[in-house]
Length: 166
Length: 333
Image (cartoon, rainbow over all chains, first blue to last red; front, top):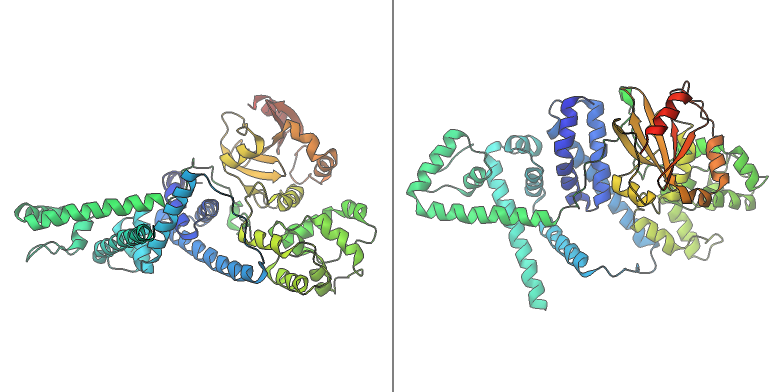
């Protein structure tokens, strides 16, 4: 692996896992897909490795999501009994429900707003996000503003909902 | 970037770009001049800053656990498209190598086992171990290669179509219910963690790994994080100090393979397992593993050298002479 790619790997791996995690919602799968993306980068030696990695990762995650949908559909065919759910420790359960709530809030964003937000969080610049989403660079600030506002509002809404329900 | 601050107030896009450090120097100077003169925009800016921080905070809560950056999984050089198989990919190739290797094993399982049975689906999704499938085949008519339907029904196929078919049959009180719908459902619902539920498949992969080693050393093994390796071994995997770790992978049930590079083209593998687990794995399995043809690399010694390091049994293999391997093994800690 050339040095610059090794450097990109070192500096981008975690961000890429995070980006993937918020798409597949499974830490191990996210790590696998990140490795897969880097493996492809080693093979292809793209010019802008970082941007390229996020594109590949997004594609991998999309394939993964399709597969998950197929499996779920299949699951409803074969599943007879509910899964036994092991009670998680409080802290873990709290973190999990937080995560679920953020996930649900993210789901309320339009795909393009969500993508821009996740890419920004992954460390991409406005320029890179623009290239990747097809938006004009001048529109990225507005897009991120809208995405952030929607995320926070949806999250707060669900919290209010929970409080109201008791 | 269009900065809209001249006429009236700064728009939120500009404020976010400012907060994100994405304005050019000129744009920034223009905005800051406006902010100095405009209390409303300063308030807006403070609000937007809160919003940015809150959004970041929420995203942080939806992040995976921070882990050490693992060594990059190496793929086959030369761009042949050879890369580690995603876990869900059909392992037909593995099955066929397994069949090719496993003549003796199959013969032991039952005289009639026709190796020609297309048993590819057997290994998928960590479905019941191959041995079960082979056992069941005894009860089936000696299915030749021309009977894919029969073998798909009777082998515990995990492939979607196969499973659907099978589950449908099971649900209707069909003749081959063994793995319950519930079990299959769990398999489908929870992709098996690499080190645990994936074990049956991993075992098969471990068996074939050495046979395909020269085709591509990285093909057959499931990559592991240091943490999962630690979970398997009960301690951190040992290494040869001073050599870069190329990757860590699952080499079979309870076996962690650590690959370290001697130079750009030479890699040695440490096969590590708990010393107290050697017996559990069984001498048979070990013998099988060693009996698998391994003269695939030039000069690779066919007999692995082994030693105990702490609580681990470590075997070393690589395309260098036994003397060198022995010296490298000495350095493992």
